[in-house]
Length: 417
Image (cartoon, rainbow, N blue to C red):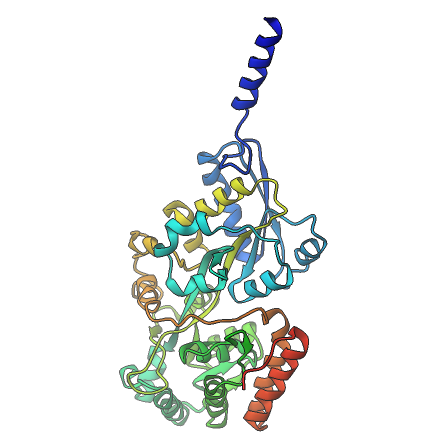
């Protein structure tokens, strides 16, 4: 009798201690580690207090990683030591799935209820063979930031800039009126190329093959070259150089995503009230004016011993108003659409004199899904070399083929013909 009572008591104690981590438990007492970088890591750190009000028994530690993933990839390759949650750039995640197969938890069932609540194009980066392996985080809808006062001085009406050809002509007019100011700056990396490529509906990979030699790629590259050749774009080297150019009025526009609004406010603060924001010009009148640049995802490592707790954290930071409130404070524009109805999201921005976030929300409706494929961890240098070659005047078709072959050699993927 005593033995039976002890056995029953033991069973009850086990049952009360929490469910098995693989069965949908909250995993009381779990400690989860999250690898992220820069402002994203800071935003996630600030989320912990609110998360612990809801889940007081789950401890969260933020590990500051880097955009080169040097603190994450060795553990994934070794099969041990990886954090529970890993941030990657959206464009890199397919490469992670290929380079580190069976290292990420299948979240298909857990994310099914949220599918219609996120920007449709954001799911492409996290889906492979119909299964979802990460949650979309932020996105980068892109626009044209322009100096209202400089445009007025040069007699340029922003409403008249409907196409990129119009933009180039306006740039010439600006240069004539204000010789010390050029229309924009480029940094000779693939940010501008990707904006144009996405706007055109192009992709780095198509049907499983390298596609940087596509008609859309050629059109994007030739626009970059035309902007340089026509004298409406100067090389400002890097992000810091761009800030200096803005402060010195060396450039009058920036072709960048929503997050650059925060950069202008904090680093070009004396120009409050002088900046406007407009949709991108189209490649042809009436054409697409929307594009995305950037964005991240959050994935759960299969090495995690607390996958349920890890998803609870992701769920809190990405699918609640409380979580998204913190994100927007750090300039992370949500791909989670319900937050667009939040009053904070709709607040007027004094620097620009407009409701900035609702404006950018209107630039997410026709963003093309871009297939980055599994190549982006290996494609950075060949693409930068490609852009540099075209800007230097080398044959665009030959340069695209060279880049495609270089990526193919590393990734073993075929090249589209």
